[in-house]
Image 1 (cartoon, helix red, strand yellow):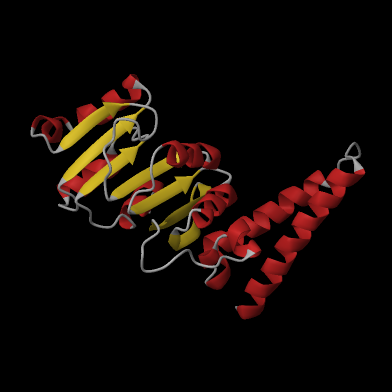
Image 2 (cartoon, one colour):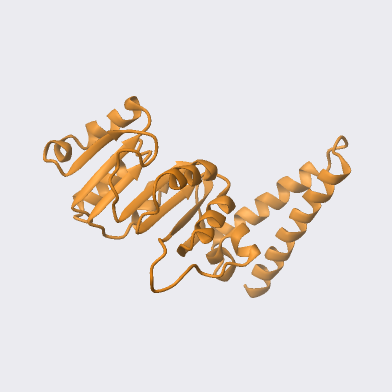
Length: 222
């Protein structure tokens, strides 16, 4: 499956859906054409990028079922019950949610700094219901969950789960195993550099050791 197909497969039904940084608008097209939402917002900070989604969803825009917004993050997007933010860095995703609002449900696909996204969500009392690594030419993390409710608080993530993703550790996928091996290889190459300072070298060694621990645990269960 492609990256877009995998993201779409994890989008729950919603009344109002928002695709932030929508690019071509394929995820919104999936939600509307399959009757998985009543109304959708497509939002992008770039008018040129948003035009691609407007073209794809021309009929839905004309029918009033899709509302295009040129905006930064959630600016101009009324509160909705499902928000998708995919293809951005983790720090940018955190910035958008900090200055906007926490939607009832969210699906996030950070390109990097996933740990910062997890720490932000758990720190705000969110429940993370899905958190794993998949592969489509590159490795990607997908994090889905819900905003805090009166019925309960955040899941108690461990430090290891914050760093690597809970589902990756509890039920490792082949993609996560390949990611661990690839990261271990890269760190091994970096450690061969003769110009690295002692503190940097020790930090890389600690990271590589942690990957070895994970790898031993996964392969020991196979």
